[in-house]
Image 1: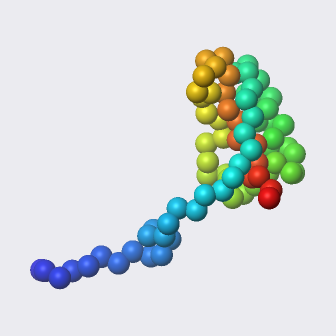
Image 2 (image 1 turned 30 degrees about the vertical axis):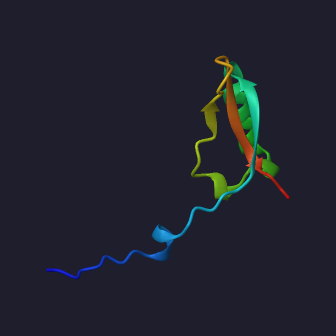
Image 3 (image 1 turned 135 degrees about the horizontal axis):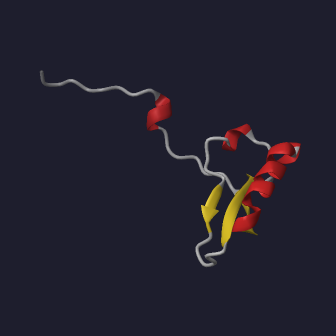
Length: 74
C-alpha cells in the first residue's frame, strides 16, 4: 500500500495565530480572589481565551504568579 497520503482538515494544518494579551503579576495568596473577579467582570471575559491556562508561575519571583487578564485591544 504505497502512495497513501493522509489528508487533514485545514484547522489541523494551519499556521499558529498569535494574539497579544495583558497579564498581571499577583501574589500567590491572591489567585482565587483575582480569578473570581476576572470571571465576573464582563470586560475580562473572553471566550477566545477559555482554552488557555490562566495562571502561570512568575519567572523571577517565587511568591508571585502571572495571571492572563484579557486580550490587548489595539
